[in-house]
Image 1 (cartoon, rainbow, N blue to C red):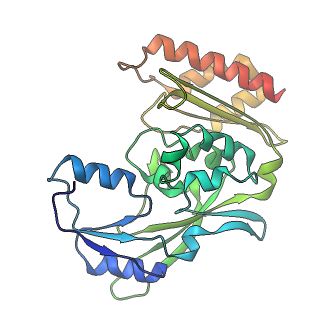
Image 2: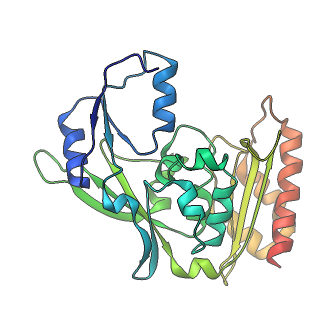
Image 3: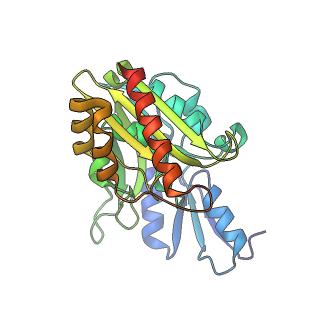
Length: 274
């Protein structure tokens, strides 16, 4: 039970949502609400006075081809995105996150912007060089400002957004669906568990792109790693590990185990791309 009185708003447009955030102190955007509800139930100290539910905003639920990209709304449930096949790598990654019941509530934008470190949905979007459409309060009394930017430009371990900025959708280039891809995910206790490591690779026709989650408290992709794997294949694994730096060591897996696991997953992925 949430031990607080909460103001609940359900705007019809993105502009209404941003305007409400500007007017109301302590407001938070909500789509699936899994993390917000859990945190509010755990402690009365969690600052939750106003929630702005974005479910009615049409742009946050788009799921279609528009122009030269496949547009995915940030408020789409992971299960809805995974039910499609426009971007097979994204489908494979999302189907590995939690179970179907939980995926019915988790949203695409929430997975990228949430507090959990894994953010696995970011892997295929980063590999595809997807763009992200946001809307944010304008300066002073100016109207809200919309921007479409490369996801990698505003993703530094997690989405880095301005105060009050709301993610509306992601745009995946159509040709990404044609790339050869590989996805490997390993957990400690079973399929419905957080990953010890999740590796995604694609070959875009010009070279290899690599992204990983679980070995750090955030997803990772770097151009230098892509270049090394494209040039040297499995011989570049030491270069990959050096670029990654110290991996996570916790109660779920030792450093040595994660290193060995990651090496095997990269080799297996490269073999699938060959």
